[in-house]
Image (cartoon, rainbow, N blue to C red):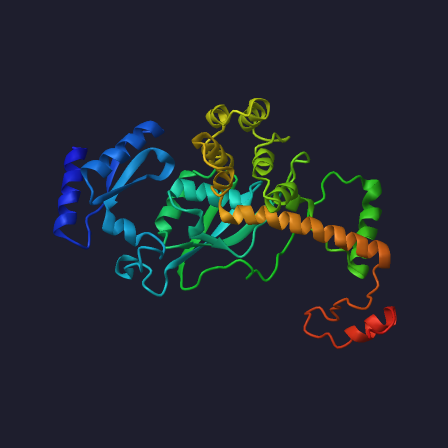
Length: 367
C-alpha cells in the first residue's frame, strides 16, 4: 500500500510540475538504520521524490522535490515560490513565544531543529536567556508552519520545562541585538530572618550607588572543570582537540545517563562507545561524537556544532576578559570617573553633556 502511494506521488510529480500532491507518510519506527535504508531506497527508486525523517523520528515523510525546495530558505536553489505559503509573500516569518525552565536557549533551538527536521538557522532570536531561571522570550522561524510548532507543544516533545505559544505570521525577522532589555524578578529563598536587615541594606546600596556590571556566572557555564570561556579560549587558539574534550567533559548535577556517557569518554576516549551511551536529546555532544566516529578532521568536527553556539563560547571568553579588565579598573581607580570614561548622566542615556565636567573633576584634563 505504501509503495503504491509512492508510485502515485511520483506519477503526480511527473504530470504536475508544481508538485501539489500531499506528502506520503511511511511508518518506519525509531530504528535509525532502518530509516537510512528507506531513505536510500527512495532516492534510488524515485529520483523525483525527496524524503525526510518525520517529527519525533518515528517515520519518514516523502514529498516531491519541487515541494521540498519550496520549504528551504533562499540559497543555492534560488527564491522560494511564495504562492503556497499561507502567510503570503510579505509575512514569511512566524513569531512565537518560548517559555523555558532550566534550559539554555540554544539547547532548545537545537532540540526544535532536530524534532522538526530542519536546520537551527531556521530560528532566530534577539538574545539568549539564562538557564537557571524561568524565562520568556519571543523567537522567530523562517517559513515554519505554526501548526507544526503547535503540534510539538501539544505532544510535549520538548520536555516539561519548555512551552511554546502565541504563533503568528510576521513580516520581519527577529535579529540578534534587537533586544531592548530584560525584566527580572529575583527570588531569594531560605533567607534567615536575622539577615533580612542585611539584605535590605544591600538593596539600598545598589539603588544608591549601583554596581559593577560584571557578566554573571551563567555566562561561564555550570562546569567548574570545563567552563565555557575555556572552550572559547581553545577555539581562539585553534586547539580543536582541547575544545572537543572540554565540551564532552563530565560535570556535576547532570542527567545520570548523560553523566555515564561523559565519564565513559573521559576514561576511554572512545567516541563510538560514548555515542552509544549519549541520550538523543544531547544534540551538541552527539554532533561532535558523530564527527569523531566518522574520522574527519577536528575542525570539521567542531563545525558540526551550530554557529550560534560556537559564537557563544567565543563570547564567553570575551566576557571573561571584560570582567578581568573591569576588576583591574576598579582596583586601580575605584568607582569615580576618570579621563577616558564614557559617563551616562541620565536614565535614558540620551544626554552626555556633563561627562567632560565629571571626568575633569576626577582627574587632570585630557591633552
